[in-house]
Image 1 (cartoon, rainbow, N blue to C red):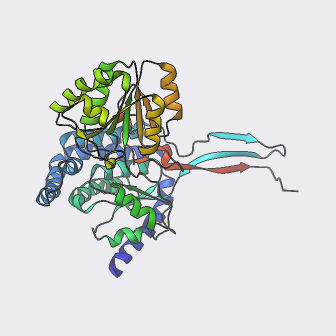
Image 2 (cartoon, rainbow, N blue to C red; image 1 turned 45 degrees about the vertical axis):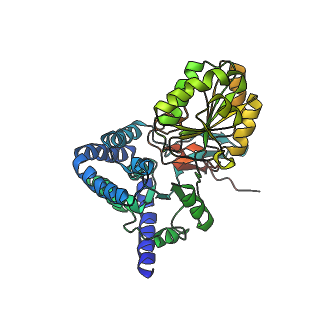
Image 3 (cartoon, rainbow, N blue to C red; image 1 turned 135 degrees about the vertical axis):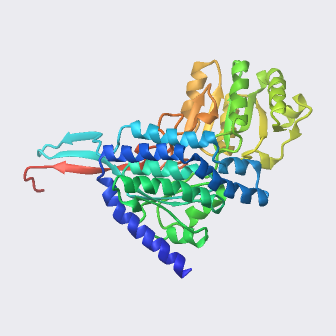
Length: 419
């Protein structure tokens, strides 16, 4: 325990010193680091996948789920996505130094707000090794130092990816302590990180609900939370049912093990008899198990009766809760009770009802006539994201560059004193 404490203390102190250096980097230098890292990720594909295979082999031996292994895998697509994400971040405007507002006081004092880095960010995450690059790239562009503590199941992958970023920092004479990966899988390391309020400015946990709750309950440092993704699609009366089928299928099936996948489908009673059999046929071919309300099971003989625990459950698998509702109001009430403030969608032809749903439903992204899978920094034009915040201070939704900064007040005078 003493050794772990010392390791974390040294890393946190180094990160605090590095944060001052990184905050002053030019946009040009930051972009060159990002672009060189992107190139090296692609040219190092073989090495990365060899290291990743060590983690995958261990995961298979433990009998971990297919959804978990999917999140752990550095496929060609994931590697190309990481490189593409870094390149996109390099093209985005640098938020540091932006002055969003300035005004003059009656005494002649000019007051304004300027965008500045948060400082030292600590990411604690599970299974997805691509988070190492996404987080490091975004934090660097936003002028922050970052401490990364990945899950034990991805240790080889995380260290390999961090090694590439460290080479990039060194190549462009940037303080290498700006990006650090905790080199141990010991759980005590997380506890120690959560105590370093003198050096770390914010904790961002990314993973299962258990991890988020542990971090929130034990941290002395502000936490940006993302508990779980219980996302719904509501198919309204009079909806374009072909559109609804495509949206619901994509929301559930394209990648069921991620937080923006649909976990509950709500269908207006007026279209249920026409829509559900067609939708169920498509889901059946994709291996989706439907757990339905009594009305749903009456329409779909092969559906399983849902238990109370299935409502509001994050399955992260090819399992879907389905409920028939009498109105949009009932659908919104259901979402308010069982949703997780992550992503909610409506399929409707009625513009007024779409506007009302978008305005009244409380989630970090509310969509009309589009898949829940779009709640993603890259898909929304932010570049790679560091996570999706389901809390509201100081960010709500995908956290891109701007969300990794804050604003401070500045003032220019010519000798004013307060009377």
